[in-house]
Image 1 (cartoon, rainbow over the protein chains, first blue to last red):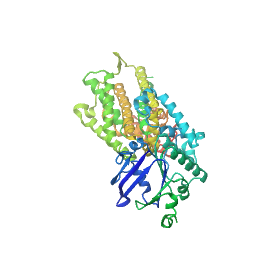
Image 2: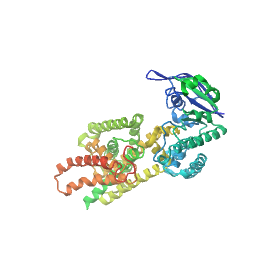
Image 3: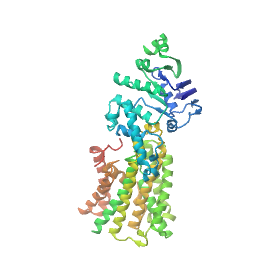
Amino acid sequence: MANLRCTGLVKSFDGVRALSDLDLNLSSGRITSIIGPNGAGKTTLINILTGFLEPDAGKCFLEQQEISGLSAPRIAQLGIGRTFQELRMIWRGSVLENVILARPHQRGETLFWALTRLGVRQEEDKNYQEAIRILRFVGLEGKANDLADELSYGQQKLLSLACCLSMEANILLLDEPVAGIHPDMATRILDLLKVLRDQGKLIVFIEHDISAVRAASDHVIVMDHGQVIAQGVPREVLDRSEIIEAYLG
Amino acid sequence: MEYILHILVLVAIYTVLSVSLDLLAGHTGLLSLSHAALFGLGAYSSALLTTRFGTSVFVGFLVAMVVAVLISFCISLPSLRLQDDYFVIATFGFQMILFSIFNNWIAVTHGPMGITNIPQPSIFGWTISSRVGLLVVALLLAIFAYVVVILITSSPFGRVLRAIREDEIFARALGKRTYRFKVTVFAVSATLSAWAGCLYAHYVTYIDPASFTVMESILVVSMVIVGGAGSRWGPFIGASVLVLLPETLRIVGLPSTFAANFRQVIYGTLLVVMMMFRPRGIVGKYDFGQ
């Protein structure tokens, strides 16, 4: 059971508070969605949890280990994977290359082994098999040799998810995983998230699409002005009149 | 014939230099303007050891490698924390610093007078003095540089370099310590450049700082761009074109004083034309800088 928590997180940009004394406690085995208006601090929170930003104050913990202040690669190596609102990948690389890149602890990523090639071929074969298995799981097996920038937007979102799985992340922090894609593809991604939840992963996603939040979340956190203003099961939180009025229209 | 062999040796030496820069600029996306200085570092290290201490050329190559790696750390450790254009400016700064050392540390480098009587390469006591022999050595070094770069770029290490070139934040999010990769690849690139410098020094047997100016760095960058950054044969083609093209001035009979200056005009014009009409270079797959 993975547990990710933050206490007293504060982050400002040029005097504007993005996070204000934020406390959070996330556990595996459920899908948590974070909603809120633009500027609520949702992406800033993910950036801090993944080491891309340092908080001005407060701490984050993975289990008992403090992770605030650790570098982004170190946090990723601890099993926290993320996707980006503006998708990031090797655009001119194949789908397979992106997924294999994400495999952790690769011997061939050390210069000595890269030059001598000792044991690298076997490792590459293993990583290839694992990448194919992951692509099959997300439904991109048939696109393995396509370039990433030739995929549809929805498929690129699937590829981002596949990369997180390939790095063996137990915690997935997904920034708008279904925004702007075809409803069928959105349903497919949300179904995958449910499968991953059932496998024991801790899943958090930021989303503006309330129907997606209702469909997939076990827990909803509403943020505004850098603070958590409401949280609970979706049917309770999303039906509150003040939430509907303020954020959902 | 001697003249043609001389040109071919130069093509081979500049191929090593452009292959080393392409590893950084083409495969990793780090444009460096300090490669002439690293080239000079290798040349001076080996020239000083062999002329002052009488060591073998082989020892000169080994020491040049150690010096190049150490100096590459001095350049890369602070510079690689910078992004894109700032990194280029930082490497330009180091180029100027190293050139100033070559030019002004007269007690060691003899400043503008340079170092003379540098011995020609020798293997097991056999001195290679013929042009054909020197060409073979230069070709072997060029092939070695190519093998190193191909091994690196076709490995998981090279895959991370490509990820850094395409999107470093993505690579970091996947747990890749990109800073380490960049420092390592800079050291490899510096070593290959320094070896090219060693061979150059022992080939021409005389070096002075004029061979290691920022113009030389720009020349190497031009070779990478003209040939095609990040492509297998681009550095060789770029080096061949930019070494051979100015030689045509000699063939058409221009006075050497004019031809020397006109060389720069050719390089500049070629760069502008390539950027306008073929930014991916002659055989490159991707536009330079994208």
